[in-house]
Image 1: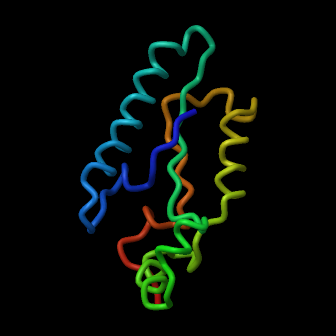
Image 2: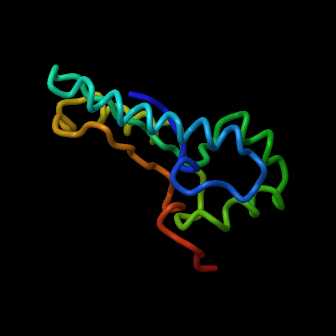
Image 3: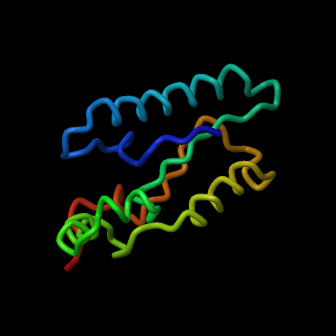
Length: 119
């Protein structure tokens, strides 16, 4: 299991080219590993989280204006919690995903599903 990001699927409007490119590379690597090892019963998938409310993000989004600038792009209207990503990892590590390889599991509150969000 690898960790990429939702930006690997859609890019970012702010300058973070190296980060976005590296996460895209993680997805490409995941697909290739999946194909190489599939017949040996080894699966490879990637988690692609959206913004998760960690202490680092909380510090970065320290005021309402910064927080709201991000939240407007999340259809669910909130940041994710670490446990929500952990649950995705548990799914990918479990037999419940036994016929899944070379895929990315996007857990982003709907960011990648919407061009604009309702107010």
